[in-house]
Image (cartoon, rainbow, N blue to C red; front, top):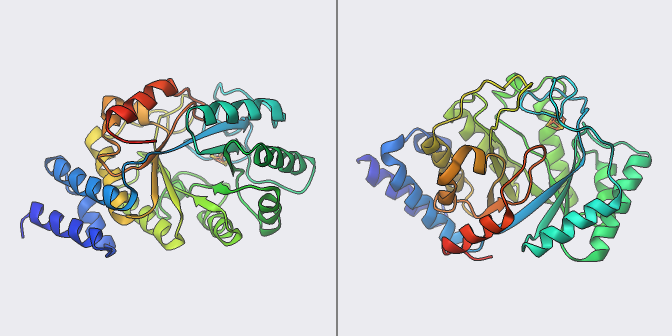
Length: 326
Ligand code: SF4
């Protein structure tokens, strides 16, 4: 069977509801630039079959920035790296409410409150977070999500009772590459947080960052760990190296490889939400117009944690011009 015929047979299998295995996904990840258009055609057909033309939008606010105790090598907010990101404690409700209202006005469905922390503990900070969630939920303008680091079951329960709907916690990369990325908490702790989020009944959003030096096979490994965890949403980010972090000198991946990675994730996660987040503008450039063709059905708009996104109006125009709906 030649490569195009094999790709078509994999596409038909996924369209028929079958799951591909890791060998198939490694073959997709290694298919190379010559096969890119065929790969994207397959991913687009799968996205169309299971997710239609609707684009899921989300937006975040960096509610507590910098001075994080952890040493994630990509992160500008770690206390271990010398960067120029602003440091501030947990915000009051006003700027969060303003951010949520603005995002709702863009047509965003989910709004995530993000804190640069290892994880929440019992105490006044947790009480403030719970109060913010209650107020966001009561306002009813947007679905309140959060990304608050590692979870424990009692804290997850409190967040749920306050009205939190979704929990975001990336695995960041594959288990086999993780030690290169972070040493202050383990991969298993990340996996356990995702399990707790699922168990608690949150819409569970977990993905990673592509382009930190991992191999295509390790991207497949990440995709399958996420499949085993049955996450609801997979955010893919493309590394934008931040000055002062250990990854500041990493070269960007070729654009075709980023698009091929999105497509591979769509083949593995046929029915899930696949969102393109950090690095969309900075790394894909004009090729960001191909993320939906590559299989994504969602994206983040507005600003990222420590970098500025482009104007939301430009993203909304792009979505409409591509024939996608909101
Ligand atoms: S735990 Fe989160 S905020 Fe802290 S260094 Fe890692 S990625 Fe950055």
